[in-house]
Amino acid sequence: MLRIESISVNLGKFSIRNISLEIKSNEYFIIIGPSGAGKTILLETIVGIHAPLSGMVWLDNKNITALSPHKRNIGMVYQDYMLFPHLSVEDNIAFGLKQKKVPREEQKKMVEECSDLLNISDLLSRFPVTLSGGEQQRIALARALVLKPELLLLDEPMNALDSCTRDRMRMELSRIRKLTGTTIIQITHHFDDVYTLADRIALMKDGEIVQVGEPENVFQHPSDTFVAEFLGIGNIIRGYGTRSGNLTEIKTTKGQVFYAASPVTGDVVATLHPEDVIISRAPFASSARNCMNGTVSELISSGSTIRVILDVGFSLMALLTRESCSELHLELGTKVFATFKASAVHLIPVS
Image (cartoon, rainbow, N blue to C red; front, side, top):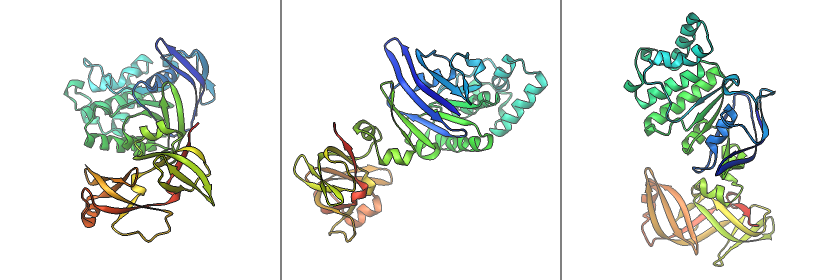
């Protein structure tokens, strides 16, 4: 539906380089990455604000690289919504229709239909200053959707909202996508957006895309240490891997050994999600290849869960519910066993 071919953009001190992406029709695609990675510049290049130095942008098999923004049929919503304070909600939504010289009666009908879709019909006579953040976001979405774009770009649309409003808006965006069939690309810093909405994600760093894939695959198999650290994977362990039967034996820098169901050998970084680590007071009876004895060195509360930091010769994190911690009587210095499957360990080769 959207194809980006080797796009490069230079904006003085910053640039995006050789970016290629393909977005499917009706896909919800999310772009993540640290601040300054070039995410907004990429969206603004897709919409036509920046002209690329090289590369092409295709929308529905049409080369739109040289088209002006108003000819691309792409909607964009920024995080500050950019509503016109002197216009009513109705006039804000109809703004693009007026620019396209849509007849007044048709404008009114289209605004009413879009307002019904977003449940904002009762706000049409009000002005932006009187609206909540969630209401303003709906108005900005309506202003973009009323033009029936082939593609909708969202630049951190929920960044300024409180957590409860963000949860409601995620449900709203999912509903809108299903009802309208609109293809959506969103920038976000919130992993909950990724878990709830994304069909696929791309991770950007320093003007380049470093990994693309379905969320579960990217989180389980980060392409490098940067991706693992950015995604907040709790256990990132350096070591050296050698083959041992069907497994790879990893020897850490301090000499401890554990196993991974991976063919990667040599200098490696092993990643392991904390929720894949089982803690017990006695050796845990299971088929898991790794069982290490250790000591609780830190307990970090995270709402309904507790991150348990163990010293097993290296630092190892597990994620437990409060109830599990209480049942195990965990406190600083408690001797425990940590068990995890070899298949839960992902190895990244270090070049």
